[in-house]
Length: 450
Ligand SMILES: NC(=O)c1ccc[n+]([C@@H]2O[C@H](COP(=O)([O-])OP(=O)(O)OC[C@H]3O[C@@H](n4cnc5c(N)ncnc54)[C@H](O)[C@@H]3O)[C@@H](O)[C@H]2O)c1
Image (cartoon, rainbow, N blue to C red):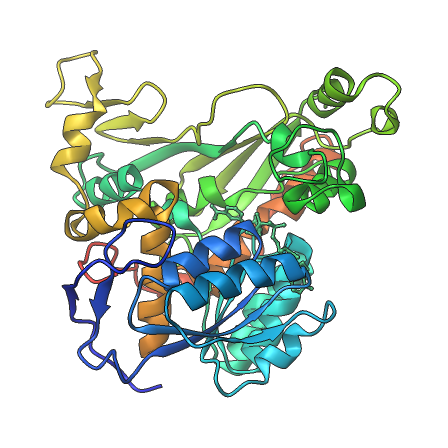
């Protein structure tokens, strides 16, 4: 793919798509020179990506693949309504995605399938020379983490982990503050995935958020596959929403790296209680013993002397929070409580409300595209993660969040599992960059393009 200009200007609202977001015109030659994208997995998340892609005029969706015909027909309708040509369709069996990867009409792929498919599909996509985007988490085992890195290095094909929280407005403002040294030398972080997922892990098999206590074959959407991980693994199975943003702030794999972690798990009672409350004591699922602890706490040490506490808390009643805290020599931000303290600027020993700080350091990307992004899903961050993917793929250059990031962040799952199994024993992270982290330059996050 040759390099294209990323000059961007506003255009009129298109009628298609699920949102009222105006379309943007990307690139001077965008009407003749479009990035051809194939999607593998068009469930809830893949459909969200389809809808965002349909709002861009520098992209064509040339192929979609899903083993569920209902998801295919829903997405074909959306694509037709947007006025795009009917894409090629795959999904006859679990491996039909390989036929999508053979298409010369596909430059880039987005993989939004259940976790156990991610690495296998990403590997095959890189081997087929397709610019690859993979949903979170990217890998489940240490071997899979290495597979991503090795395949990227062997093929020279780029892959991006599609971590949208890195693009959240407050996170990008804090990243801006970090880059401007407002917090001073960085010391300590907290983050995690604290989201009551009981309604996601169980349903009635008819609708994704419907009542019911079924999962696996009898469930629908994420309950079909996600719940199995809670049954079989005592680990932080979903670390990247929390650790991704912190990794960007601390330049992980670019002058810094994760050295080791320790993990601890509480008992697991939340999922069992939910089944009993909603399905009764006699429901067969009430007899199951879920391996996953309800609250899993991991502490990571970095080469630059920071610690990061990552929490996984998805089985108990609680309001949503990713629990961010960013702390340096001069002060700290905490998302819970929406508060900031910067020595010499804040009244001594008193919290400021974070709002004014976040507004003052609003990221240039959000200032430029915030209005358009808001309709994209998850408060706008989905627009930016897809924008970064598309813009990087158009130029065939390294994405902001690459194979090394995907591997290092996803490695928290198998390492936390090992640590928990061994009473909190420290586990070392491999150096996925094989020494290159020392000289790799920090990513330039503060720019207006993507
Ligand atoms: N970044 C975010 O905010 C966010 C939000 C939701 C989900 N996700 C991630 O996106 C991924 C998908 O989640 P979801 O909520 O869309 O789940 P989902 O179950 O709704 O969708 C997965 C889809 O993959 C299809 N599929 C399964 N095996 C396949 C195969 N071999 N070939 C083709 N299609 C196959 C299924 O039929 C289903 O339609 C997960 O990794 C999840 O963690 C990320």
